Image 1 (tube, rainbow, N blue to C red):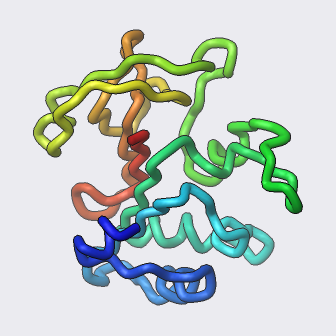
Image 2 (cartoon, rainbow, N blue to C red):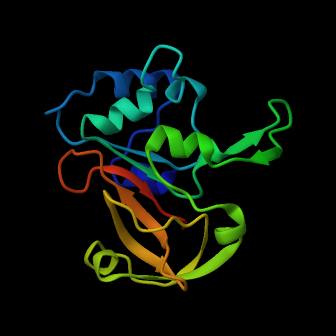
Image 3 (cartoon, helix red, strand yellow):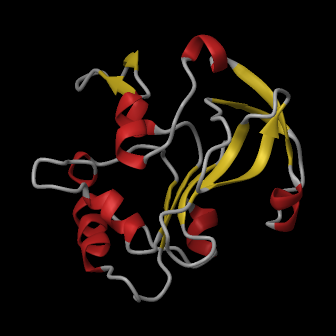
Length: 169
């Protein structure tokens, strides 16, 4: 997190983040939230009162960056934090992303930056998990050895470069 602070990002607790996301409107200055610890506070993904605040934030043209697999797919024990189950249904529903079945894309795969990724500054190959297949509204900055998107940006109709960015670093 020191790296992000040095780059001008501000650390926020769950309440501050929720308030920040709720104040964003279409036409607001560009806003980016990076989940450095790769966990979503429950209030951000709560759909009890309609659209989840995190999805609304994306829908108004903001950007969210994940630095690991989508945390909404992992169900953890509330006391120990240990992962008890993996289900890509919740992130698929909330973020309108189609994840392939785990038997087709489970595990870790080598990836390399695509031309779009190199243009965005990705320089090195690596290893990632939970890729997605190409789909409308998705830019692919890095593809795995089978051509699936290992890093991706799902646009929700906002300005260029906005949306949900999935990277594994």
